Length: 221
Image (cartoon, rainbow, N blue to C red):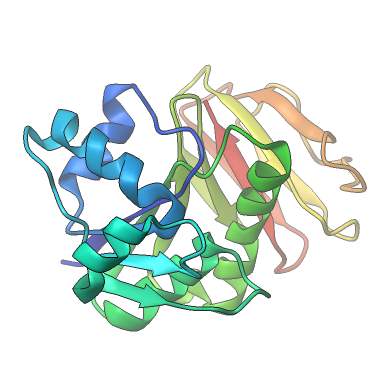
């Protein structure tokens, strides 16, 4: 059975039990450098004691000098300015944990809209670059308000009747036929982010049929 990893990013840290359960249940915890000091404070309320992450990853521009010295043995610096710290942490997980099957990203949303949009869109890049579906690896962003995950081809989502469903894609040539949604997406042209948002599941299972292999993200409340 594959292992699970949680990546902690420096956005809004969730307060609800489900995302905290995901953190508590993870086999590996990776902190982006800017999230580390706050994570350490919060970890006591999640685990009942301070839980040191397995690695701190990033360009180290946001890590305090005290933490840099005290936790030098778990720091992996990456000065690449073409990728953000979330991506650096994702690449670290993919490189270091060959038996991984689930990657959950916590704290990727909130605070700044540009960081939120960027972090969400990067899910599609990870899925495409690493061919995650073929490798049986799932990645998602989990917050107090939603779960967001990438989709690269026809899929069935076990989401439960009545759940809010939004679909985003940057591919204007993509057509997605849907089953199990209140408002079918068959005629949607994905030429703007809002085009298939604020839908709702009319069945326990939603099926999305892609016209061709592409990239999209789905957000469930």
